[in-house]
Length: 146
Image (cartoon, rainbow, N blue to C red):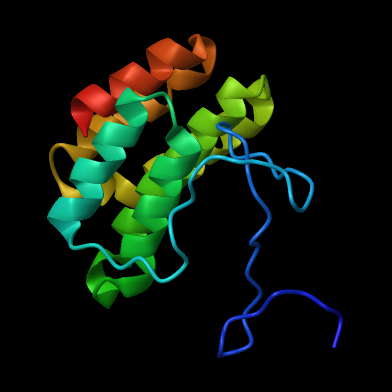
């Protein structure tokens, strides 16, 4: 065993604390509250919580909420939730100053959600324009559309 934290099915977990931008902190450091690994929100809960977290400037944590929905959603919804989570990770990269990584994730996320109708078509179109914006403005645009 390599000492990594794993769930009962053997999948790796990362229990290290994280800062407000989702960056891992040293073990034992004080971090911000995390979304539990077993969080399984309904679609309405996931959208509401993601909007709240985006409103607080915490797209990494919004991504964790959307990832919780993605992992527990019906098969026909998984691309939607994965795409929304990728857009939030793109916002996180933008906060960290990584515009190239942000653009890549915005494009991937947009490609996944564009076929789900409104408002997701609008979010997909907007995602392609976000890497030119300041992080706070980009987060506010997605929050408003979500």
